Image (tube, rainbow, N blue to C red; front, side):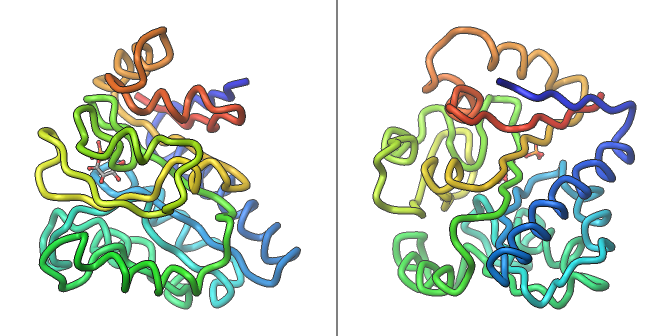
Length: 230
Ligand SMILES: O=C1O[C@H](COP(=O)(O)O)[C@@H](O)[C@H](O)[C@H]1O
């Protein structure tokens, strides 16, 4: 059953999504002594990151990583890690442990082993994953036409992290796979802007997952909470 949370504006959405994520993190820290969060990049999450960074949480017990990354240096304004460092890992949240999904290796394939090793230090499964959605219906780096789309969407995928290349993706990518995301205690889908309203409507309608890969999470047995504002 889908839960749709609709807000008048991005500030109200950011505050509510920060509360949602903070509650999931706090619950896992209370239960396990630590918790992990995976966040998306792109343009949408900035306000949410700022709101979450100010929440009163035991940040030193919290690990943060990304849902997906573009294979670029952190100096690039296309870097999702850069967005996290500038807008989330500040104030109290600076005490969190951050594992980036890109490194200096020339390709995602070359860098994968080291990233997987670093990810082992986080608490699994994730307490929460926050997804975004592109206007082409991608989420994470599950792109229409992606060269490894079938593998990342495979519910039995044994790898948690995979490279991805796609015509609409720009740079080579790296992404958490669907089973890792669906194993999270809670999943949120964060969508802002009138331009994405028809995209979400189309994604919620019938049609192949390969055309709009965000359908893979919308049709999951435990679908995400959707946080939407115009
Ligand atoms: O490329 C990406 O795009 C999506 C959506 O980004 P937005 O700019 O439309 O908010 C994002 O969720 C993903 O993490 C990012 O790598």
